[in-house]
Image 1 (cartoon, one colour):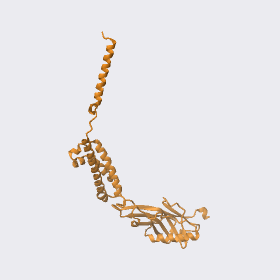
Image 2: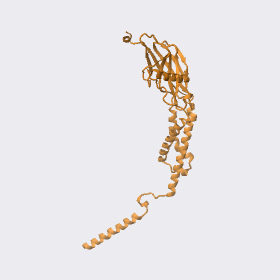
Image 3: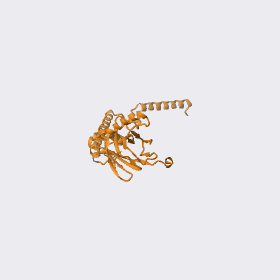
Length: 307
């Protein structure tokens, strides 16, 4: 027979023994808890390996960017398919593991895993993108097409009289002149005015233009920058004298280049006349050009007004 006091003493002794064992287990090294022991030498080696990987990928991205900019782009047609410019650099991601194994020693490569290739891929893509934007824009390159700045308009000068339309200039593809009662054609010197804008040098932009009359006759046109200045001065002086019209804003930026083209000297007959304009420049690494097609419509006076 075991009395109650003896049983309680044995239970207390058993609990005390278990507590001492638990305390001993907690005091042991982390290896018993399933945690890998920290190895400072291995940690430093891995950090150094990651640093080598970062600089290798950056150097690789620089080489790829320079190759695309100075070897691939000059030999491509800008009007064709340009998908190669982004597909090839991104496809080179699959070379990164092999590149690491070729450039690094085995002692360094053993620290690399899937996480390394994931980080290296993102670093390559963003480094290539940043360098490509830098190398493809001024002052290192000019791949942007020149464009017509602000607006364009057509004006008629008949002696001391100036005739403009009320059409909206921005984004409009045509300008219409409606003849007054008794007029059979649009008389006077007819000028096309527009501005040129470029992301590098608007002075280097070449202008070619043709006028196709309503009957199919094609006329080659010559542009003049000095004529634009003379017409602007003439318009300012006459506007101040009578104030009957608002001189259009053709050049809105100080780096824009104003141009004037005389379409005809003796007026236009009724009908639809088409202006084809091409702006081009010898950019770097390829030639940049942009074309426009505008209509000048000369209409007879409405019947109700003619009556």
